[in-house]
Image (spheres, rainbow, N blue to C red):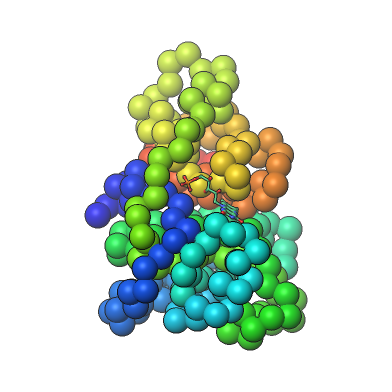
Length: 223
Ligand SMILES: Cc1cc2nc3c(=O)[nH]c(=O)nc-3n(C[C@H](O)[C@H](O)[C@H](O)COP(=O)(O)O)c2cc1C
């Protein structure tokens, strides 16, 4: 599966079967996480076979079932931490999709519970979100998304790379499916901004990750 196919096939999955992640897949995912941590200055961690901690907490949400693995999206506190977590966390979610796994972003922070002990959150660091991970009971489902004209104004003749970037951006997961973002373009310089909302900076990072995949980084630069 290519990364573009992963963008198209990924849907949030909240119920998982009890199939263990094989060691070779776990290692491949770990390597992707290490590479993203290095590039993004983050401390994201893969936690496998930890049914208790996550499910006890998520029982409150009601919608999650049998989550046994997750990725703790952790990094040193900084003004741009949320956006970087969005950008690199989504790279990992798409990598997981390419490896045949399913995911769902979860806006929660572990308190003092057992789950916190499983991941290493050092002084000065913050757990921004969690990615639930595993083999889904289903592949999830497609949700209604905005039209290009709703997230990109003042465009009459848009180049093909820009259109493809926006199509991928519209397939990005956002908190509560809010899709509160807007794109503008000046030649090959592109700007993406959040128009507010819950976890909007994380959403913006996720959306920018998707835009790059669709548009091709060789075709544009971020403002
Ligand atoms: C930052 C962020 C936080 C999210 N938090 C939750 C959550 O706490 N609970 C939940 O069920 N889904 C959560 N989601 C999943 C979204 O509801 C989901 O991505 C959105 O409805 C679009 O659906 P899709 O991912 O299937 O395209 C979150 C998504 C993002 C990006």
